[in-house]
Image (cartoon, rainbow, N blue to C red):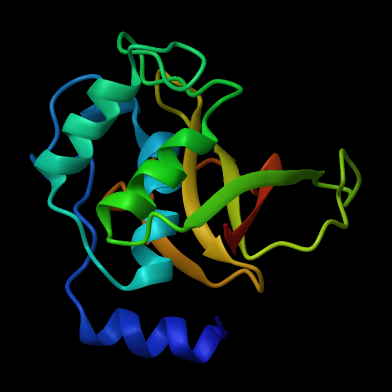
Length: 169
């Protein structure tokens, strides 16, 4: 999907709920930015915005497997792609899949740093107790979703960029 199409769709639809907008319970409210950014991949890709209550219920259900996401601190695990896939199903596209395909550090190096990708989740350093914050960008670096209102906690450039690809199964 092109950047222009993303921008046009974003302007024509309501925004994805914010984690600190009062719509999520703990731990999603204060620590769920990566999990919410993963769910946002499907929402941005399909143009369908899911109610916060449905996303939270999905995350709670998926947290039964701590390798997907942990229920106590919202930390994602090696099976985090289940969040993207379940969000696609909730958006009416169970035929779509998504997965991390690479990691790029500040110097442009890392695991599969040049892998073709559709979305990026930058890992921002913060002054908050968690120490990191995640947002969602398209492949060209245009911000598509930030689960936090304001950038008051961001203390520098992203430490690394997590690369994600989506495809039709």
